[in-house]
Length: 91
Image (cartoon, rainbow, N blue to C red; front, side):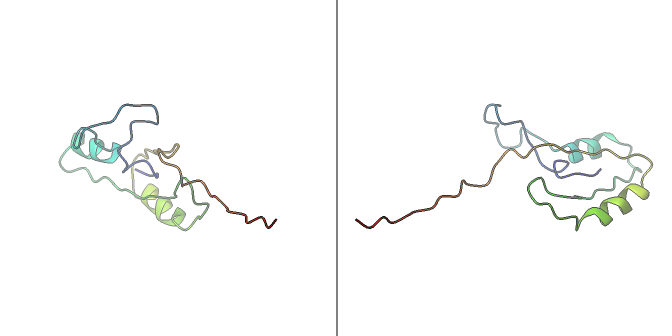
């Protein structure tokens, strides 16, 4: 399991508000459904809003240690706050 949204419970930007405990992550859902002896490897890999490749090696290692890879990518449900500037105009 690789990706920034694998361990994030998201409904999407236009979904209604969910109640606590109503949502589960893809990672938790897969862990709950595989057989007891199955090992689920997980690596973040990257962040949606950060161009860093620092987590790529860990993701590659997790993939190499796995029989199958599920990548959970996509957008982030929250955006960073808009940047504002204040200009002072002298008259």
